[in-house]
Length: 318
Image (cartoon, rainbow, N blue to C red; front, side, top):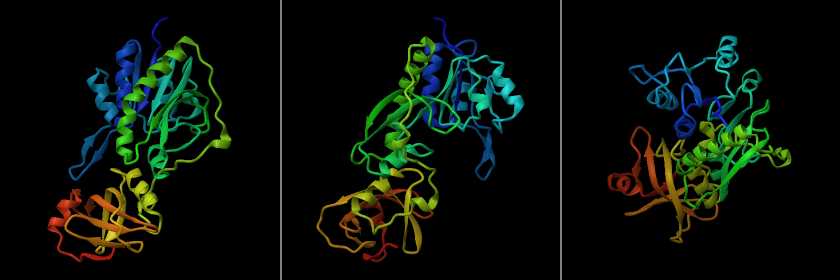
């Protein structure tokens, strides 16, 4: 059976291993991955230097050319863009961490358009499945490939791969764990679709749960919750966008913490800083901060922070 013609759509670093794997397995440009779709270049920083997505960087290194077989539409529904995609006569669209596709696009392939999602659907439908799973204290999650349809993250499931969430794993660590697994499940999904040897499984909507986009106020720590909940909140937002609180009148990001077992009794939000630890009270117990980022400064381990700290050794954190 000949290799399928694939159009790959993605933006961040998470999508890069999938693009690499597809290009290596099936070929690129003239067969296999015939085009890459990603976000437009943007000006960033003080110098307004033009930067582009991790997927575009990888595509360029693989020999794809901007404006030719690297497409960067401002609007997905633009008729000219739809016609440009159709001209590639793709069999399969593979979508990883990209935009919501309109029906006029995801129905173009001769076989199917599929997405790789960072949860065991129907659990955690939405923009932040990795963060939300850890914030909820889940001990397992996974990756799902599914056929695109109008409603976001509701399409029939093709494959799933379960992943264990370790007790202190952060969202960043889970993200990195998922990346090579995403590449593998993408290859297996393309093989299934190309061979026609598959039975898509409908999702059970009664078991669906949301994973909405995370905003700044969602990241604020509530020390009136149980220590385990606070711990999960911190690691579920680390390293980005990062849980935060107010300390000495300024914002402070907390990137890493652990449950404290010293037996010190503190009220929620109360803190003690000694020679070795920065301990904060929660509803039932305490947490010990391990890595923080004070406002306007670089992230540091708490031991380094304590060495230079000249403030109060106890008080309320917010």
